[in-house]
Image (cartoon, rainbow, N blue to C red):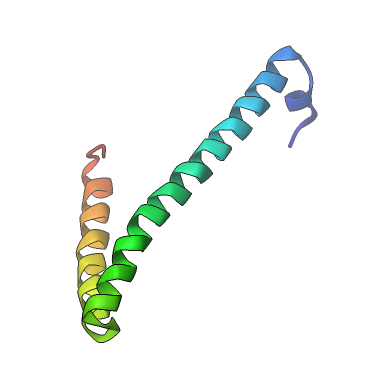
Length: 77
């Protein structure tokens, strides 16, 4: 980091804004994780881990190429 980032009144507000965005991003990620975790736990309890794991791997295998296709084509998500 350079010293110019610490000089001036605007640098403080930019730094605080960055910390606020990081905090909000962490909160959103945690809420999404919990929203996905509870149904998965219920499915594992009902159907068993041996049936749910291959299904989840197949779904994740479909998500990864689709995300790379979007980034290669320049499509905004």
